[in-house]
Image (cartoon, rainbow, N blue to C red; front, side, top):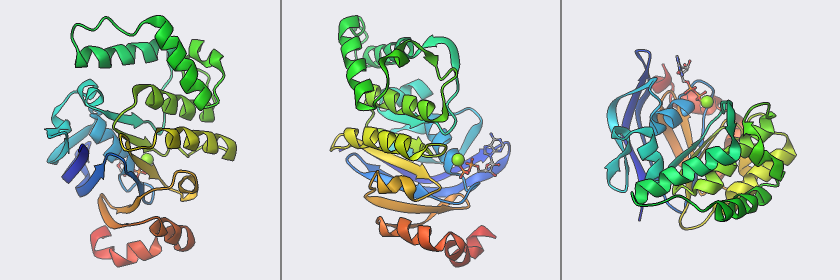
Length: 257
Ligand SMILES: Nc1ncnc2c1ncn2[C@@H]1O[C@H](COP(=O)(O)OP(=O)(O)O)[C@@H](O)[C@H]1O
Ligand SMILES: [Mg+2]
């Protein structure tokens, strides 16, 4: 069974240690939520896992299918089944959604089989339309430049569309709920829920409990000052909703100090 096992992860940004020995295991078929105050290192975790060059791994490992993904190039991480939906997706003027997605799929296919000639266009179009319908996206989206002039909600939906097309084994969603109104939140959540199943695991990073009303997590973790300090079930998220993070800070003040 594939699982992502993160062990004793230490990550520095510009010489400052942000992740200080983080441990977490995500099995395929499970949805995990990570919650934590701003500045605690949630995005740092996401970026380090995908290989952003700004984030320096100084210690620890992240094993997926027996490989330490931290030693792979970002595209190789994607090929073995990791996906990151960005908190702040960037625009790529001149590259249409459709071209971008087809290139990504073909890159995955080529990694699996060097002889692969790429996805036939009619097959790609049908699949793309299907996935756009799932996310209630207008088909004209496919012809637009990636994230160029997209609203906040459209950008997040585009991130989920990429995920639905690439069908990763482990997806990391970094505050996909931020900036979404309730309708967009519901649509994005339905998109994630549609992928749920024994072949899909996800790490939903969020500051608020709200998205977890729609994407029901199997496990909830609280992150504070670069570590996972508490793990439990969905009730943990409800406790945070009611009581905030103060009790966590108090309980782990020696850690946060
Ligand atoms: N690219 C960066 N350059 C400098 N500092 C950064 C960078 N990314 C993150 N940090 C710092 O790392 C800490 C954790 O940030 P982040 O991982 O974004 O937290 P979260 O996502 O939990 O709000 C913060 O103190 C932030 O200022
Ligand atoms: Mg963040």
